[in-house]
Image 1: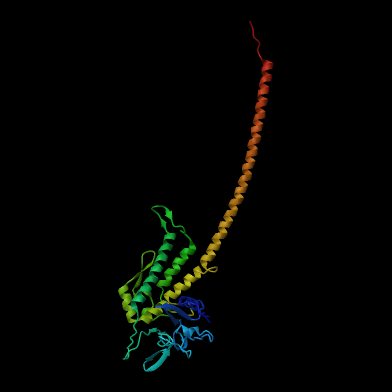
Image 2 (image 1 turned 90 degrees about the vertical axis):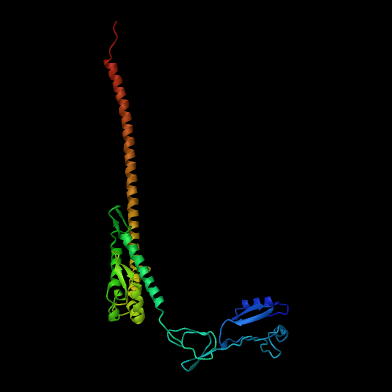
Length: 323
């Protein structure tokens, strides 16, 4: 409910209405208050209740003397249309539940029937498949770089020789090269739709012409090749890749999480070993300093004793002078 005072300006009334979150939006256009429902359909009629004492809504020209809307620009109503002779009404002009897989957007009325032709959006499918291939190639190239060893520069990738990453690389290669038995027998491998492997990194190459032709001829078969799902794990290419990547990257339980935990444990163990080694070295250093100090003290005593003995011997065997 919105309380309107006689002293309120149009802008003030507008702000009160909008602040009330009453399911409507108020605007001021050419010194006129326009109130629009936020929803569509016949059930979205706006109700006004005037104050019996002040009659402010009547004063503003919103209601008539009989409490009906005075200047209704557009009445709330449902969209009415016919599909194959069947009359249908909906509360919105965007309808997605009449024709399976099709969203209708009603723009206006027509005097004659409108023929609707539904075609597969082949180019969008091609673009999505190419995006999939690009993502796969980027991942495989990154893995190859981390596992590589350059014999010319004698430099190795940061994970060169890592068994886990090598295993992932091999798994991904198999996922895109295996036969998909749950797909159509005529299109059960990527090479049959124009996607082949190339180079030692086994990246994928798309023959866009062949892919487009295959999609035009059998879009459902291509969809099955990528998205097939089965209980025995023989899924489509994209489904397989999704399962594999999830298995490796899932937070907390994935292989990468386990690898990270293992490396963290190793780092902590090495740090502990370093601390113990530093402690032993500190003790060894202290011992050596004590030995060095003791040796210096012994040398000082021995030097003093040697000087004393030399003086005594000089006195005992010293020679006199003769004229």
